Length: 163
Image 1 (tube, rainbow, N blue to C red):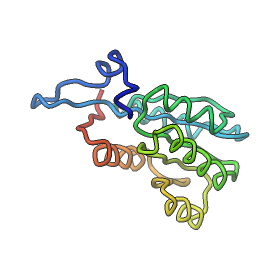
Image 2 (cartoon, rainbow, N blue to C red):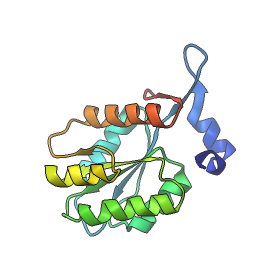
Image 3 (tube, rainbow, N blue to C red):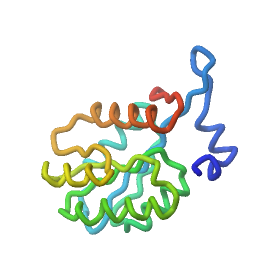
């Protein structure tokens, strides 16, 4: 379904030839701040590190509804949605975003994120299909490596994380 939404300009921007002539593409990630959470420094740091690693990053800004996040993910044809949630609403927001992603036909892309989330809640969310979640102190390198590895494994193409 994702390829049907991809425009020619998006495809040409995302795909290039690697050193060995293989087709490689940049990973596109939507970084979103859901709900009433007004603290976005961590999301901006992660988004900046992803850009530095060669990802194409779409940052939604603050106070996004799950519907707005999923609509942006569809419009931007992303490989992953990364939610930053510090408000304690993760047990409501992750399942709602996941439900909407499935309804909109993009349930095959990665839903990941981080914030102040207990280990127990991380385990529960992951058991329901949410990807790895990251807490305070996680390095940006670990987040980037996880997303890159997930996209290569699940999205079926060679990706690059260099500019």
